[in-house]
Length: 102
Image (cartoon, rainbow, N blue to C red):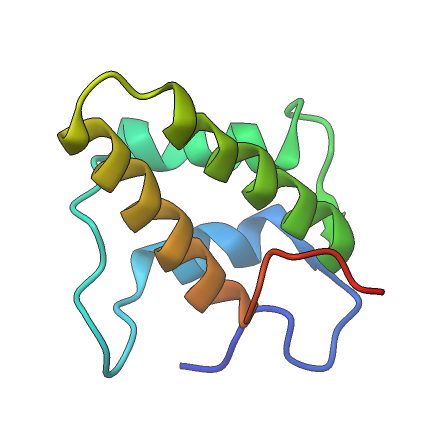
């Protein structure tokens, strides 16, 4: 499966939905996400419903914000769940690192 940002500066909400439905080839299996979980993730990344496109930089910022939630996790299971989701979304987007560019 090609990455969603493959040679594109931004993606549409529908492309993101389609990418979360497909299974990635190779690597570890994706986290088990219900339809409601996928919609919550989409809302966190894209924001309000009327926003239909997101740039790669905004996508990385949203992932950084999601990644920071693991520090507030109360249990190891919650922390692993957050890390798993962020790792999966990085793979979908073709993001190697969440560190800011210099």
